[in-house]
Image 1 (cartoon, rainbow, N blue to C red):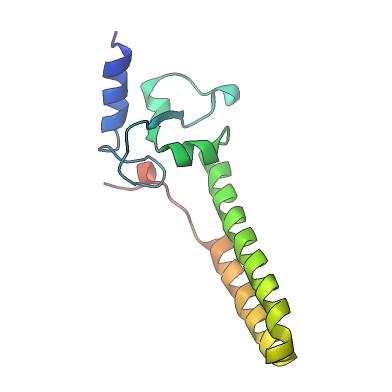
Image 2 (spheres, rainbow, N blue to C red):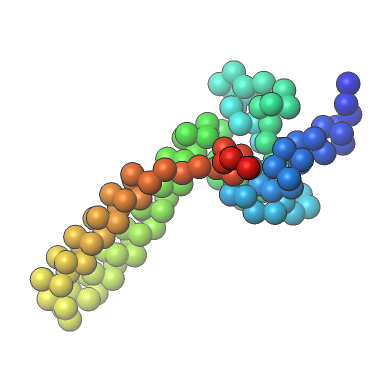
Length: 127
């Protein structure tokens, strides 16, 4: 049976030293994440573990990969929504209703594209 250091090396090598989610090179302090959370029946087997940067692991939290993908899209849309609505409110007195409607329409098309876009994590891509 491998010791913890050997297991971490094996997990690290699964993605060639990159975060299994975002694909960025792993820095010291990287995390080992359960792909399927233990509370949902995920195991401690090496096959269910992936190296993760701290940022991705904290954001993923106890979510499954599919839930994490939805969370990423939801957060992006929320940030865009806050920015667009704030700017439109400010710009409406300068641009007029027609331009604001055009910008809002373009924004809605962007949101639809984000919602439809597939997300694939680094560990899911063909190498």
